[in-house]
Length: 223
Image 1 (cartoon, rainbow, N blue to C red):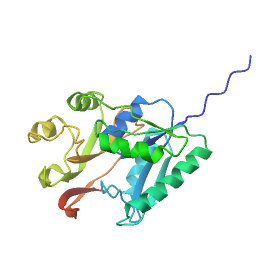
Image 2: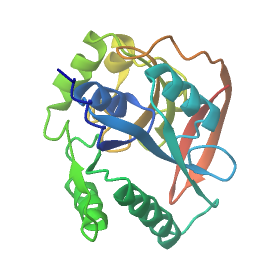
Image 3: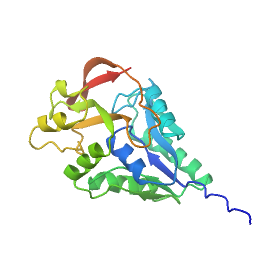
C-alpha cells in the first residue's frame, strides 16, 4: 500500500525572536516558516537584535525565516506595503494562516485582523487570553532561556537590559509591570529551550539608550 504524503505546513509564525513567539512555536505543529522584519541596518527596529542572531535561531529550530526589510524610520504605509507583498506571496504558496503570539492587546489584534481582511489568509492566536503570570511560569518551567534586550525606560531602569529572564528578574519587576512585558515594558531574545537543536551562541555587547517616540528605551546589544 502506498503511503500518503505528509501534508505541507500551512502556517507562518510572526517571529519576534522573543519568549512569546518561541512558546507559540511550541504550541503549533504545522509551521512552514518564520516571518520577521528588520531595518536596512540589519537589526530589528523594535528589539535591536541583529539579523544573524535571528538566522541562528531559525537554524536551531529547523525552520526557514523570511525577512521583510524596512527602511530606517519607515512610515507605517511603507511597512504595510511590504507586508502586503509578503502576504500576497504567501497566498500564492497556499499558506492558510499567520500565527501571532499576542496575549491580550485587543487593539493590536484588531490591527492584524484588519490587515489580513483583504486576503485569503486567516489570523491565528495560540496564546490569546492566557494569564500572563501563568504564561511566564509555563515558559520558564518548559526550560526556555532568554535574555532581555530592550526595556521601556519609563517602566524599567537600564540595568534590566541584558539580564536573563529568570526568577530573579521577575522578582525585581516593579509593581504594575506585566510579567510577560505584554504592554511593551521589555523585550527578549530566546537562545535555548524546547525545539532548539543547540543554544544560540552570543556575547553581551554595549548598553545603549535611545529616544523612541516621546520616551526612551534602554538596549543591550547581543553579538
